[in-house]
Amino acid sequence: MKVRLLALVMIAVSVGWSQTQTGDVLGAHDLSMSGTSHIQGSMSAACLYCHVPHSGSGKSALWGQTLSNQLYSTYVSSTAQNTTVQPPLGQDSSLCLSCHDGTVGVGQVTPYGPYIMHGNMPSTMGSQLQSSHPFSLQLPLKDAASLVASLAANGTTADPTKSVKLIKGNVECSSCHNPHVQNTDKLSPNFLVRDNLKGALCLACHETSPRTVNGHDNPLATWPAGIHATSGNMVNPVAGLGGYATVAEFACQSCHVSHNAGGSSGLLRASNETDCLACHNGGSNLSPAAPNIFVEFAKQGAHPFSTNTGTHDAGENVLLNQNRHATCADCHNSHTANQVASFPIPPAIRASQNGVNGISAADGITVQKPATNQYENCLRCHGTSTGKTTNVAMFGYLPVWVVTSIDPLNVLQQFTLTATSSHPVTHDRTSPYTQPSLRPNMLNLDGVTPGRTMGVRILCTDCHNADDNREFGGTGANGPHGSQWSHILERRYEFSQATAPGGTVTNLFPNPDLSVAGPYAMCAKCHDLNQVLNNTSFSGHANHINDGFSCSTCHTGHGMGGFSGSISGERLVNFDAGVVAAESGMPISYNRSKNSCSLVCHGHPH
Image (cartoon, rainbow, N blue to C red; front, side, top):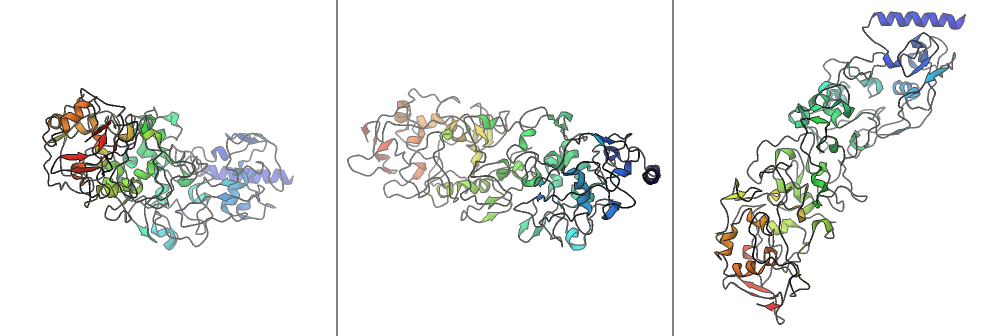
């Protein structure tokens, strides 16, 4: 009689609740015999599987389901200002976990259960919650640059509907979920307290305007104007993201997931290398398809992804000392990146890199937040950082310059204004010597069509770029993701190599091919090779090129990274010590005014 009376009471309560709602209310939480859940019991009153009016657990919400005593490993992050604690037993989140951590069988209701249940729960969260959104935080809440100020200031969210709220001043499961109504968001029927269209649920707590708190800048600044917040590309339903239509509508959900994320750091759907792969691999997840970035990484030379000893972390130093890696997030800020609709004059950074960090060329140490020049982002790794390595076979042959610095991979020393000569990357062209071979326009990839006007600066990506990049007439993505040519060069550039210093050069290219397919194609982008063959700047150019030597025998590509009394370094003249040798005990030398050298090359003394 007691159980029957209880059932009648709970049925009445359930009917009363349903009359105040419209449509499917409890949804998957209706575990009764008439419910639609994956798990069903024999009781007809849906409320009975969680609540009892008398003799329950003695905790809140007239709770009846047996509580879990599981200890949880919760979310941690190098950038998080708030830390989690174990959810108090019987409080808000603990109630949800009594079913959803999977350690207690559904229907283990006291004192009238356990009920016999049929079916299986599709998924559980388990006790390893590192890849789930943090909850049950240590109070009081601490402010952070990516949080709306009101959370810590007065315990309120920025949700204009007031549906997203803190529970007893804390973030709990019911801050985002209403367990009694499944379809508040009809396109995302996940018991949300409000719709999450265009990230509305997330933006109730996360700020998208510039903020700096405790020295940390908001990584979400300018999100509303970024491509991932505005993209109208349709998302294929087979991608399994949910019921929205476009990337902009999915917003945060395009890359992040609140529970059981594939990559715990940042709650990414996958690891920080492969999260971008879902859309940027040329597949069918988007319509129209996004640029295929990952096809570039399959080429001969490509920027390396993280390794076991070097992985990206949002809290890492901007200057990447002893942490060699190059993930998407090192060069792109996904929250502020935008589509490249036009190509600004160098050295300005491109829209796809908006908001990314960099290192100043002034000292190679000062952090630039954000980087305004493209080279500042490159200097995170290719400047004063330690841990760089030369033994990467995929990049091909590396010359050993006669005039070099202590760190031959520090391009900042090679491009500096104090270098005798350098390509104008970090500063304007300042050479006092005329450059008769310099074209008025760079040539497109076809080697014929004029491209961007030649200015006083060039970009790193004018040389290190995809071999099919869109900026110079191709159809591929822009940037140094990968190339068929060595050193991620945009075009073919052959390095002379010898059996030994001063010995026979093993890869001569006589009867020079000056076409876009030839060994000088990279240099020919900016320099008219016919002028070079006419000896307009050096009387020996034609002899060397006709004999088959490449530019790398005598010229360094970046600039003079050191100083020498015997090689002044004008016009980027340096020598590959792997190809040339000293003559008769004399130092290898170059005299510009006399147009003369002292060295041995290909077995011949000069």
